[in-house]
View 1 (tube, rainbow, N blue to C red):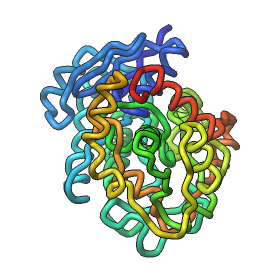
View 2: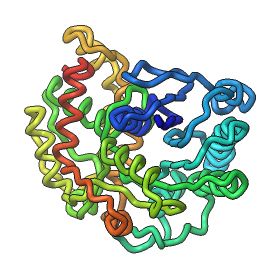
View 3: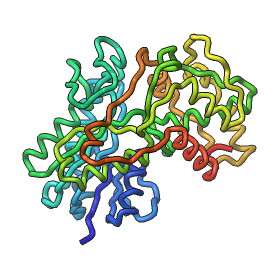
View 4: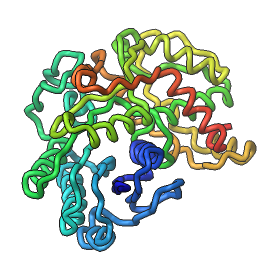
Amino acid sequence: MTRTALVVGSSGIAGSAVAAELVDQGWRVLGLARNPVAQTGVTPVAADLQDPAATAAALKDARPDAVFLTTWSRQATEADNIRVNAAMVRSVLEGVKPAGSVTHVALVTGLKHYLGPFEAYGKGVLPQTPFREEQGRLDIENFYYAQEDEVFAAAARDGFSWSVHRPHTIIGKAVGNAMNMGSTLAAYATLCRETGRPFRFPGSEAQWNGLTDMTSASQLARHLVWAATTPAAANEAFNVVNGDVFRWKWMWGRIADWFGVESADFDGTVRPLEVQMADDGPVWRALAERERVAEPDLARLASPWHTDADLGRPIEVMTDMGKSRRLGFTAYQPTDDAFFALFEQLRAERLIP
């Protein structure tokens, strides 16, 4: 019997990847977004999750077996993040409740579970790395915790199992995404090549020299579907990363070589991309017109603020995946290969020249 999945945020980096993975595994897939994009094998569902009545109307005939929550909405303050994003999760779970079909809900959050929300990101007393799932919540308000609490409450009420997935920075393709390091670095490297500027690392010494890891969208997608179909993974929170570790001092040169640009030596000075790329919008637009790039708006490809937050952290950040490994999830993805696959995809789709 064909299973039905509802992917919430199907136009985003994580959502589009899990939708593709589900299609490949033979699921019937409903892709919910405010403005759905065409995706092979995915039935679009348009809804504004901040409108509970409209969300319920859009989902009245959905009858999903599993729900994958991969979206969020950035607000000006953490209090607003909590209010809006908790309500969005609640809208979805209330919308699918009448059908009584849901057996599992998977929620994607991230390492801000351990590092704190944007307003206090990487500050104060932080757990020791590598982060492990048994490390408790920080004593600070965090919209990830509010999203979890909505899922937990609905699971207790409606009788479905749940899983929480905490990726590190996600490498994948999505235009208009608020947190997109891969496309940001691709756009930045392209601009460096266009203007003759050196490809300068924007972050901290701790990130340049320390060990880190990342999560490809395809690895996250495999993990989400695995947890939704593995009884031993029910009602658990998981870290999910590619499985390798690296230092940015090595990866930065790898990326520079792929784009054919000069990688500047890091001298310990933090040079945020928000500053480096502040005046690049017109340069990108002219480049896009000349090279027939499909997206002339640099702001829809690059999110410098988010890349700065990750690469500017004052500590090295790694995540432990022992919990998933013990339960049988063995997938692995080299991170440099994930970057290169994304760059090739962006070039093939004319999003970079």
